[in-house]
Image (tube, rainbow, N blue to C red; front, side, top):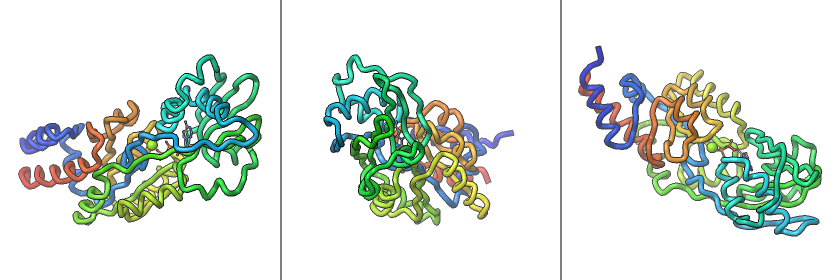
Amino acid sequence: SIPLGYFGGIGLASRNGILFKGGNFLDVMTKVNAVVMDKTGTLTKGVFKVQQVVSKNIEEKELVKLTSALEQNSTHPIAKAVTEYAGDITNGVKAEGVEEISGHGLKGKIDGKQILAGNVKLLKKFNVPYPAEIESIVHTIVVVAINNQYAGYITIADEIKEDAAQTVKDMHSLNIKTVMLSGDKQSVVDEVAKKIGIDEAYGDLLPEGKVEKVQKLKDEGRHIAFVGDGVNDAPVVALADAGIAMGGLGSDATIETADVVIQNDQPHKIVSAIKIGKITRSIVW
Ligand code: ADP
Ligand code: MG
């Protein structure tokens, strides 16, 4: 039988916008001693805005047009920024055979030309030479190649969520280790990590890289809560002791796999979820 206190705990959580998919996860939350968080959409708003367009051997407008025609086929927050910025200049331009390469970006054909739009890893994968200085840009960038020739990049910026730093601080006062994982560049990741005071931060990770990091923490005997929102986060959400999905931007797969769903986008709700677990436990026992 389920002790009465669990119902109280689940109810209290749901009134705070936190959905527990079973009373046992209230208990799991009390044992958590490492919280691993995705960057984009979890600690940052995941609402990107185009800042700058730098093109090579092509008009800037043309670069935006081609990139946007490709990005129209993606639901990634980066894709939304580019298509919004492009507006209707993409009208009538059709990309064919578009493939999303997880953790890298996109590949497709426009007017018989092969277009790549993604990160530096994507260009490396296709052996496209690029100027070394783009490696040191401290922003999220979409690098573009046309017929395997480097054609420039678009810089985009995201913002840190208002309650991210306080969330990390409160986790530390509960003796919880904090870790951030991201597919974004290490330089961007380091900057966000510094601003919010997180213990450890790893960038340039593919989805399987995120799984490895969480597995390693588990092997160290840590009790892990993983918090993510993205299309690629479902495997790590499943692996963690407590898999938490941020509901607002979350993908269906991640929400379905999650043990706990946070209905708004505030990371501080993770602290609330842990505290509600502890309160419930004190009533049940
Ligand atoms: P994260 O949520 O940590 O940013 P993702 O796996 O969603 O990780 O993405 C990893 C990286 O892959 C992004 O930071 C970006 O550089 C690149 N990327 C993924 N999808 C796209 C896309 N549609 N357009 C351009 N770049 C992309
Ligand atoms: Mg993500």
